[in-house]
Image (cartoon, rainbow, N blue to C red; front, side, top):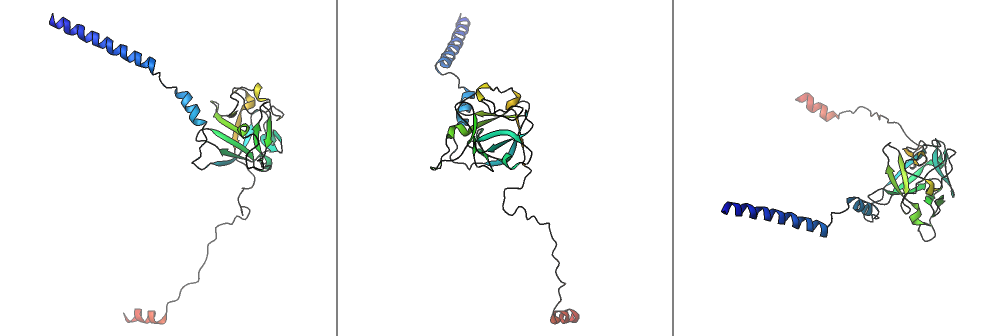
Length: 221
């Protein structure tokens, strides 16, 4: 009877622990890791130094590179074109970036109608439509890169076969029009004196002559 009571007590205690654990999960649901990553990736990093990369964006559909000429944005530039050199500035430790034309000085923005335009800084030192310039880089399974608008989720930067911008509301992640390849710019380096490259030169020195007193000391020894 005593052994049977002990077994019954252990079984009841086990069911009680399981019930308490289930109640705790109902009161404290498990955190949403995907939502946490999305929220942290959208915060602006004010402490770290922003990284700026210089490269071209090759469009999969047009076979040309993205360029910013004034307010006009297209994907018709040849490899090495000055307007195709882009400054890509990181905004967070996540994947948000700003794309700026090195030659035009304008930022690649997407307005609320889904149209790609080039914009400049205002007199106050702020970008006209700052949230419109932010992009989120997405590396796809086929190794292409897509740029999604950070404000309007599901809107991507895209170009047609003729290099004309496509309205962002009509784009999807799996479309060829939103696929790009990052390529190094073949033009001159944006650094001072880069055109005055010099080859390594050997410097020849004349043979050294010992003083007379040093020679006498050696002969005496």
